[in-house]
Length: 407
Image 1 (cartoon, one colour):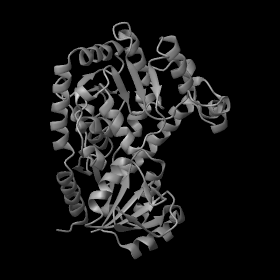
Image 2 (cartoon, one colour):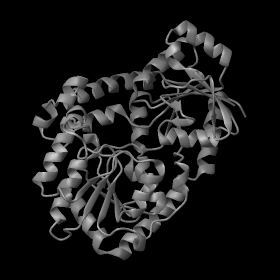
Image 3 (cartoon, rainbow, N blue to C red):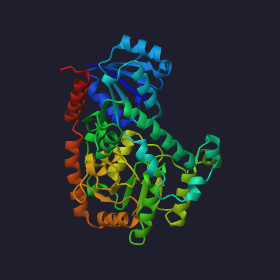
Image 4 (tube, rainbow, N blue to C red):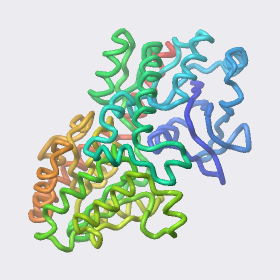
């Protein structure tokens, strides 16, 4: 089949730069299908090599005019057009172009984050004064938390219009199915689980090899990721576990010059730094900076527990990766999380705003090694099924065949 993937990928220095779930999908499809990326990203060629296969590349910014887009689609003649991420700015523009070109019968929207859900929960638990505050970085970028929330609500309006126009929708959680049914009950829904980054299909967490009391969180920069709740939970058990360590992947706000901090620290980052000191956790928090795929895997395996304290998630790949490695996991029971892990069997799930319950489950993992190991083993068994590459690729291909009406 000829697949046109509309996304925000970039291809630089012979490396495909895009969200891991898109990269995982492309890696499984590229050897069997004719793939072209219609991308709002960078490349210096109209074809690129990915995993020893050539894929086409079209600069999406050059085809914003409906007439030019229609002419391009006639020339390319894809069997299926896949638009990734209902919450992203380009999605509605892409949908409108496909509507005007009369291509919606073979166009599918692929859910990941959901703007309507993210808008409602974006800064949950963050003090109002922090939401309204402006740092120098915020002023220079003309955005702060308050404005980010407003922009998320605007994105939710665009997302709703895009979903209303669509006839085909790919998702994998009760949350994204519920959103689709609310806005467009007649659209076809295809359930397809993600394909993870290749390195996470190898390796296994073992208690003997981890660092006791080490907590890993793979993202923290935005309030939606709930890092403030994790800090409050850690403070509740710090007296019992004074050596506990919270390791947060992403931007490091500590090892920066004064000028760098002024230019990079958002009001939320300032709040996190202030809260860390206020709770007496300054020596218990480590920021790693941005991690490569392999370094991320190392941090999962080194951790005593992986925590996903988000205020909302649809189908979190970070939880999937941790489960695939067999890391004991604690996750807030939000959005689609409970579709991917059963409470007390494959992870501990808790209400997102309950720092006390999160602290309780951290204590349980730290103090009961057998239960923690059992949790990780069950998680790995579940993940092997949910993220089986062959099975999930087959589900995608079946969806594409049904959309293109090709056997």
